[in-house]
Length: 177
Image 1: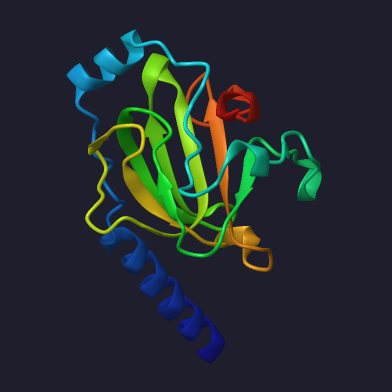
Image 2: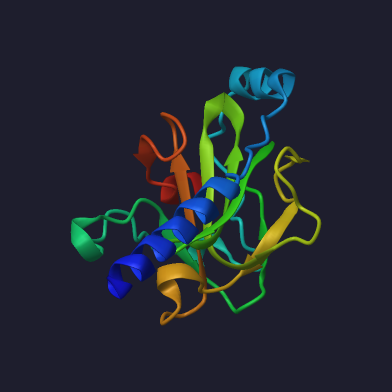
């Protein structure tokens, strides 16, 4: 009987905690700026989004196998910790988050509705927030090895998606040459 009363008490606490927490609200992006970006064309040549890295230092890691049957939907740009990460395009900061796979990540909605993914960051630029408008070359964060890259060399994982956020991955390597 005592076990049952403890189980009921624990269950009640869990339910109350779940009911009293509120999910994070997403900030809607400014519709005029979104429309303007979608009407723009995405260039075939983008600047390398890590300061100090030259095109001949890049390695095409697109499509390499990853854990759990995944494949690499981007390229890894090796650089020292805290190297400056810049936006490869004009666009809107759509998401600043942390997760177990990419670690500290930034999503930018860019020209032609393209989505640009910056992962394994040490941190984002201080004061950067969802809805901020950035231009190519603007500082957005710093190279790290967060997320599932914590036991690897520091690098920026950069991905481009053409069919929506996280959909329609294309190889960024040719865009950065």
